[in-house]
Length: 612
Image 1 (spheres, rainbow, N blue to C red):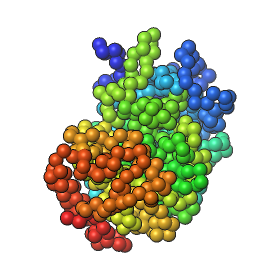
Image 2: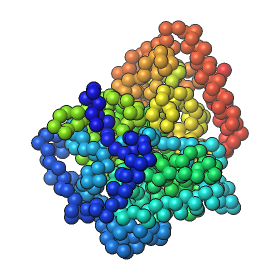
Image 3: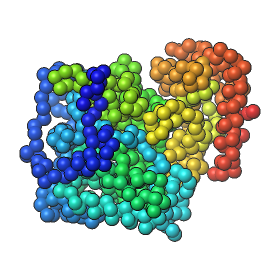
Image 4: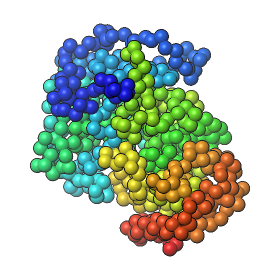
């Protein structure tokens, strides 16, 4: 469906928004006429010559993932283990399909569009009205008397619902899958360290949803791993169905994402956004690991050639993915990690990067990772004629939260062990919408704890439903949306790690300079990378420092590759008095926000915040 401008957005039922279209698509995918693997159309070929990221190797990492199973017949659900959930209807179950099989299924199902990205044909999907998570529709079952009921920090993020509501939705999910002829099942892992690794299962309606979790989670290496696979947690994704009785159930809408810790199961209704599955498991890791004394982190991580590791804390849009993809360092992961007695480790098997304004010049690793086996979400496409399209990362008419998921082996210099020693540098990324924070500041260990608990940043447009422009927010531990326990539980764990293993902490502002959002300019990636380089090379230790009069942290007067004026935020404002007033306003916001943490946890860090 081409617009007059010549730009094309993905044509898919969810983009229409009508229930009839959604059900039609679901019925089509569930149809018994869906061909088995031997009947699928072969992968299309094209005469377009794509740039290569590996010109010599015949063997590709995708070839190492080959544990695919297709079970047909009345015992298909039994053979894949989903009959224990009550799912017995589908006569064909596709389990852990290879990347090529997923690509073929996606095309045969017409689940999206194959677009010609510069480095290879890439499957592209449109997730409808949900182009980000829907936090108000996420619920956790409060099982009275259980361990989770006693430990979860119940609030407007960790919203409680009842076992009865969950049971009703679970029954609805099972009933729906039992009307289908097909189901897609992915069995894999979360957590690279075997000591705390969790087995996870996803039951989905669509091939692209299996593709998404195949990219994002750790893939089994052998067929034997699937024998007797007993998941620690299962997500049943009924994206095409809604919770019609949501008002009676006291839910927020007919979209529902509901987790039951004790039953080790979650159900999803009404949203096609893949990130609900990814972040749902991440939230659970943020429960499981601290309960065992280990630290779960919303951060990216990389490691230098000498084994020096660094972690980057930050919310979506602050630069976690961009800054950790460093051509001079090996990537461990871009979003979710753990820290235990052995060191740090990735939770995931892939990356989930924002594509807004993406260019090869500014973010080469991410740009080149967009090729066959990656998957684009909600990215505008440009018609090239002859039935071909190419992605347009500058067209954000659909959403500013366009994304690409890709397996981590798409990054040439990824760290294959996915584990590293204790980090030398801890970096807090803040997208300061007020234009007050400097590009980089060195923190004392006490200030580090204050800023970790505060988690100041801005919600960047598109990362959540209803967010259309940046707005200042304080998100505890740079990930409040994913913390089932009280923030001080995580702060105590970080404090324990820093005390035991050392390391330097820094605050890096990837937000605005020269004024607040709407007046000043966003920090360039080049500037932020120069700050990160100074930290990782250690050259920042040689810089002359000045103490910020309000926030108390140390700010370098000069760093290589950075305009010295930028290092002094006040000098970038046209009106110094306006800067002072805004700095005081931001400082007061810090102080007001931190009041709820005063006296909580093992140490009270209140006095290490701004001095007004």
